[in-house]
Length: 235
Image (cartoon, rainbow, N blue to C red; front, side):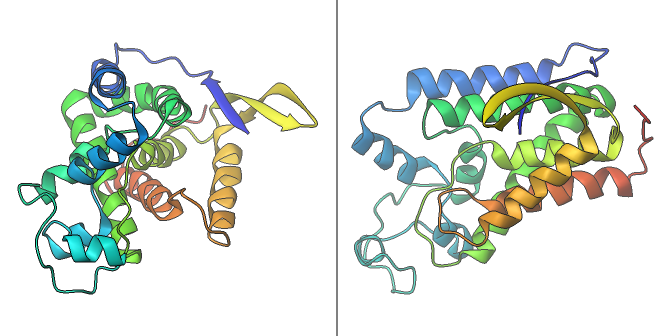
């Protein structure tokens, strides 16, 4: 199922959500290289990489060319790289057009309502922390991985978890690809269940989708609002 919109209008202008979407769009259109080789180098220079996150230093040439994090580093490829900032930068970077459209569309559907409830400041911290936690959890489960982590999907997952807690019965408009694609409405709790099952199925295959980041972000988003005892809305 592909979410199109929710039937749950926000009461306030979602300034932080709009800024995040605009900044991500500007980076994708005007800062990220368009050449594939240059883009890969760009990601290695600025994005979070599990090996780097767990060791807190940039990957070295011998690690890169042998595709392992286990070697003692000879010389760092990007010695000036800030590992902490790379975790934040990763949240704004996207691999291709479909990647950024899918993430930012879902970000908008779920984010405006969460920003409404949390307020601007708490919401800003929420999205940055949920995104960072998703990257850290992915890194913990992929200690030796040398592939850059890019995308806002960890944040989106956190927003979905928060949305499930706050608005379990809110109606979502979705597209269902079942032979033909047709629109229908579904309660948020059923959509989230379907989504969670799809993420668990990803664990059985080898792909470039980080189910670890998605599930950890989702759990964080749900639990943090539950622990803070936010009011739940029965619509």
